[in-house]
Each structure stands twice: as C-alpha cells, then as structure tokens.
Length: 387
Image (tube, rainbow, N blue to C red):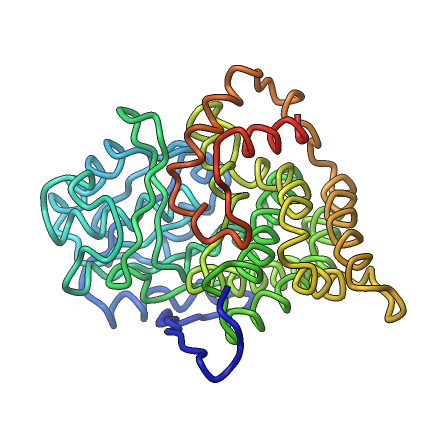
C-alpha cells in the first residue's frame, strides 16, 4: 500500500460538473445545449411508472431525440449495443441517463459504441480509448453507485457468465444533476441497499492499494454522511435533506473509488450478481463486515479511522479494538436498515458459492484489496461466514 512519505505520487481525475439542489433538474436543457443538439434518454420501465421519465421528457422538449427504456437490473452487452443503435438512428449527439447504476452504466457503454462503432464487447478492459466519447449527462435516481462521476462501468457478459469492468477516463460523464426530488420515490429497501453500496465504495476506497490523500478525504466524509443520513432517508423517504445528503455521500464515495479503486467486497459482489443475480448493493451490505474482518490484521490503523468516522470509537480504545468495533458497527448498521444479513436468505446455494469464489479471483477489483488474496478457498471461506 502506498505510504504517505516523500515517495508519494498519484493522479486524481474528477472532471464531472456537478449541479446539486432541489429543482436542479430544471437546468437540464441548458446543459444539453452546451454539449450538443439532440439528447437521447436512457432509463428503465420502473421509472416510467413513477412519472419521472415524463418529467424529464417535458424538460427536454424539442431537444429530445428518443427514449430507451429496456434496461434490466443487470444490464448486458446486447442491451448496450441495441441502445446505441437506437441513439444513432435518432441522430442524438448527447446521452442523458435517468436511473440507478445499471441505467447509468448502460448509457456509458452506449456513449462508446455510438462514437466508436462496433460492439461494446470490443472495448472490454481499461484505458483503450484515445478520444472523448459522446457527452453524457447523468440524473441519478438512487444514492449509491456514484457512477455519475466515475470512469468505470460494469456490464454483464452473459456469454462469459461474468460482469465485465470497462474503465475509461475519456468516457467519464460530463455533467451530474443531483436533484433530491429524483430520489424521493425510491422504495425503502432500495434506499437502504443502494446506500450500503455507497458505504462500501467509501470504505473500500479508503483502504485500497491505490488510495491517496484526496480520495481519503472524500471517503471519510462520505462515511460520516451515510451514518448520519441513510437511516433518516430509510425512515422517511420524503426527507429531502437526507435524500440530498445521501446523493452527496454517494458522489463523494464515487470520486474516491474511481481514483483509489475498490477491493475484495466488490470482486465477491460482482460474482454474486453474475451467478446468482443478487442486487449489487445488497451483496455489498452483506459482505462488507466480513471482508473488513479479513483485512483487519493488514490495516488496523485504517480500519480504526473508519471506526472514528462512524462515531463508534473512543479515544481510550486501542487501535485493534477500534478496528474490530468498525466491523461490528458496520454489520449492526446494515441490520438496522432492515437489510438481509445472510446469503442463504437470498436463496444462494453452497455450490453457487464455490463458483462465485473461483470467479472472484479473476475480477479486476481484487488486486486493489489491501490484503492479498491468494486462492479461491480464502474467498469461499469469507462467503461461508456471510452464508
């Protein structure tokens, strides 16, 4: 792990313009005009039913070239390619995404295919692009993924049976519009699980191999905000202050992990999503305390800092005690939000765990974990602790 000494060196990349506030959706037309002439809206059927899609369509007016609503929970290569084809046919030069992580990542993939042609399958990997992609404006309807400010996208490759990470600086969204009203209709269980997704981003980026002083500050502040405001948002979905602060927390955590990366929790959660179709935030919330305990002996000081950020440690506690308290508090925190605590409660089988453990070893996130993971048996043992 990089020490903060005279050898310290890092890059920090955060180019997205952020527009925050109740009613800030009203600035969408101006942002589209600044980037292009015609916008193509990417969303999902669930948001059509809430009325949010119609609201955004009205804001866009004559700027709207078309709408794509066929985005599932775990978007796939074919979904991206189909959306790109529709956007091209509509003559769009700006992509607007309205939704959660799956919608945003679908739109990110579409930006690449519309610009470069071919299929998203041709662009698996990291930093393969050499020019800016189609401009992308993101309107998040959850407070969790942070995808509105990150350079990465995670898309399911059904042929490989694995979630593929595509990481491209040239494809980072140009604008993020954070309007708390856009998250007001989010159901309680999604508020909780997406909030734990943001928490996992913050915690993993703070201890990741590529951490740096800027990502650290964003991660720790995100943890503080989530501990304070996520329970309030879960308790009262109409609390727009809590909704807004959770949007800020998710964004901060997104900026942190986009630069510092994540670790073993994400590798394991990606595998659960690909094999068992477990929602990402829910998987993260279950796995996070167990991975924190696995990493404890490698990074006790950093885990103690997390305890301080969560407000569970006192000055008299030794570092090791603080570190244990952080993991215990994290598990209790997820439980107080009403989230499932065991993988078996979600229908996951022992045989699936073995497949997931093997799959996790090839996930790119695992290399940034602060403690080396040497074999699939180690991963399987952590899965079993969460089972």
